[in-house]
Length: 68
Image 1: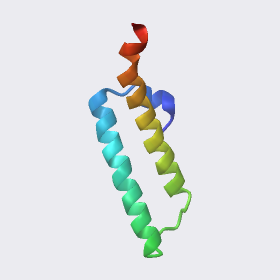
Image 2: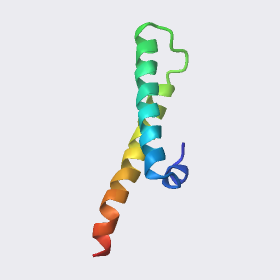
Image 3: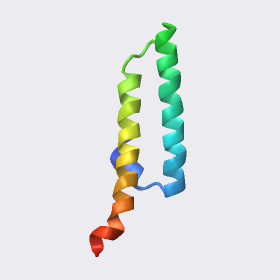
């Protein structure tokens, strides 16, 4: 998921996507530990998605204060 797509989401959708991404990361790490994960690039990609979502949430939290 790209940053432009993430910025178009509502706050509720961001929370939902963040929860899904964290669940995906947990599942990927579990699959890695049980040697069932085939695509190792899934873990860093999911971590990047989580970081992008958190970045947008932080931008929105500080945006009203920047206008003052």
